[in-house]
Length: 194
Image: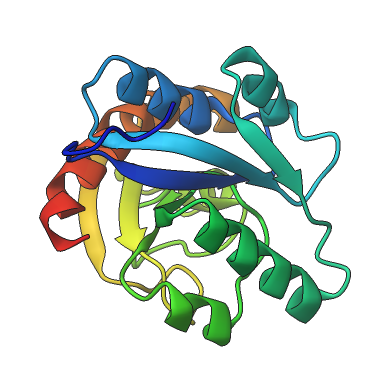
């Protein structure tokens, strides 16, 4: 998918570590022209990330960097991003923390999806913690990435009511459905700023 001349679509890269369900969702939205982005690159920090299968399925370039030497790998990633004219980075279940230097180079152009109503429940095991604390609501947040974990400016949030019989699995599935709705919406919302 080459960006056509005069097109208002921009090139995006998606970073994953796991199953890539948000990645596939974004790919489908972009292919249906419901999102003004072309997903040109998929990055992973794991060779066995299930989401990498979407690179093959949708014929998108993939790159794997294990982050054993974070500084070196980030330099290589920045070169690849520049070469492919990537203007937006979407973190979709990416489990590595990017350096301040990397974030500065892409300031205001890196967004992340997180399965809680930030600023509550930053980090990992969000659903377990939400249920342990007997919260009435949880949800998901799309936010800009800054140098602090899950602390960037919020773009969009969606609230999900917690049910009496909720388990981590049930809650995470319901929240994931909402993630699939708000991630594309958040991208549309920030497009004028890119």
